[in-house]
Length: 270
Image 1 (spheres, rainbow, N blue to C red):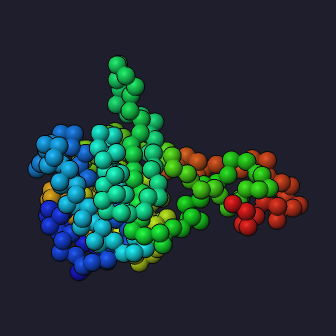
Image 2 (image 1 turned 180 degrees about the vertical axis):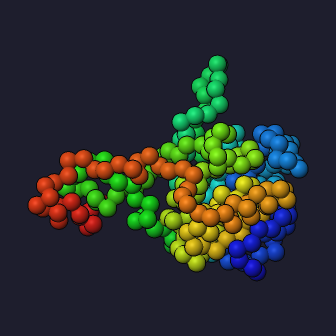
Image 3 (image 1 turned 30 degrees about the horizontal axis):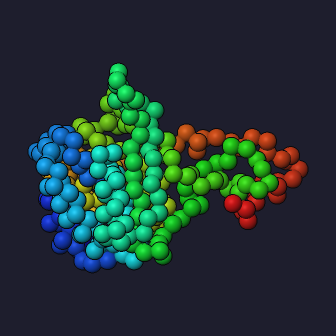
């Protein structure tokens, strides 16, 4: 098995060629079966076929995860409830979070409420898993003695803007994800040198972020144009990620006087 590689091929077949329990973090953004055009294929299957497809790639994903490994899966609202049951009941993974990615702009509707979020399921292989809170802490809004002033847990509602179609960072891919969204997952659930796998790598965001953060990575996609896109992004010089959580820019209010700096740093409290 070679690390730091992009593989053009069928996700299920290519995952089947990897050894058991070799992946520390698996991030999957599979097609949602909504009829999107992915260049050389269209995301539209009969319902039972899509369910079987999901079962087959999850079978490989679970096999590849280390006992301490984590799995994040992006999924649309029409299938996420079924996906949750598959992960928890059929594959017996450990549920660790239902994350809501809230974005400020989205599809406009005149009848009904406009969508402004996507869902991400977070499961682990066992109850003993990698989770690094300190690298993803969010600055506190106010100083309080009981707060950990190193920062707060980000919670399960994440606000990251879409990579808008007018942005310089936007690629010709219909479901490109913001880099800072993947940064949080990778920092929290892997360590430098760990292996991150994305079986539906698309525009290459996960592998680019993993590369910048010093993780090993493997990306798979059935579209050779997306593999070329991903390679170009990974090889490009890094200056900054294309998005951020706006809370990361804040400075806590009501900080104590400078004469008592110890009061502003209280790592023993959470």
